[in-house]
Length: 337
Image: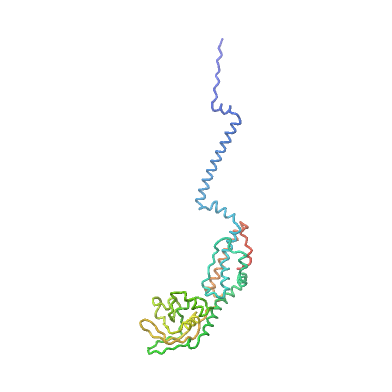
């Protein structure tokens, strides 16, 4: 009798057996944990990539991208304010008749949000609003600057107040005098700047608070801060008086604020020119600007302000195509460039 060969069954791999023998619930749980681990790994890698992109774009991504599509109304109004405040400031100055000089307009800077507003617009004067709305009126102001006209009128007023004795003065002298005719003179005090609408009494009251006030009296052929200085400037263009009353010299300074045409006679001693005779013949007025003169400083300044405002508004309108919050604020509709 042939003995049957016993077939041995291969023992299953223990790992496979463990998997097969585990309850379905436990298997599912292990699978779920593995998914979370993968998710964490993906998140970690994403953050690393985001950090690298942010670093190499200088922060534009994602913050610049976020700012591009998200902006508050105050931020949008702030940009409109920065674009239009220079012309608003120009109109405020151009309509002011007591301004000393139109050559030094303050450059208005919007310091913080939200910037200009409808409430602020309502506080502007009638002429300021007209200036913002009407280009032709702005051109009229350039050609008929209120401040220049006012200053010219004050020069005429003070010149007419000069007595003939003060306009024409002669001191006897045995010295041989040198004569200069039809020269433009200024005084060493023409930059007092306390206001032409003030009186001599106001001037005296003001200067008593200045311990370094210079009471010397000089005529100069150059309108500079060095007029009367013994250290700076051309001494040959400086002529000492020292014999007028304080009020008379103040009156001449006011009348010759923009210079006067005069004849003078003087002698020189120890490097100093001493006046012994003078005749103040005429005042000099400030010439009004002409908008047609494109090389005029005042005209060029105005045109630059308008051009810059138009460029800035063009940029804002491009942003408006992507974000409706850049729509012009109500107060901007009352300004026409």
